[in-house]
Image (cartoon, rainbow, N blue to C red):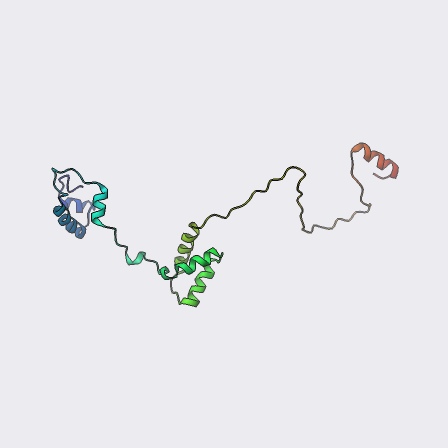
Length: 164
């Protein structure tokens, strides 16, 4: 668009708007398609994007785990940790990539899994009880266990036994 507004291509390259090789190829492409004619209206983004095509990925952005993606996804769904996945890939497939590569794939896989759901249980008062099966400390008392009741009944019970 900067070239169409009348700026020179070298000015765009200096401002890092266009790279040298890309500029040359696209100037030829734009001239052939009539995009650089100042008298014509600007073309839509969709038209230009369709003509340019999708960008190529650098070889450094292609994962070394691409061939093992399905296996890693299955392990993550089973709850296997990243360190165990990395070790299994090393042992079974001779994977020489880093642990960080495995972590990135595991994190990406987990982000696409549905969240773990919980179910809130609702009971009316008196319909359920909570029981703890843990063992607490042993309480030793020199008095036998007593029934604790209201203060009036407690006074009656303590007066009859003589203990408080």
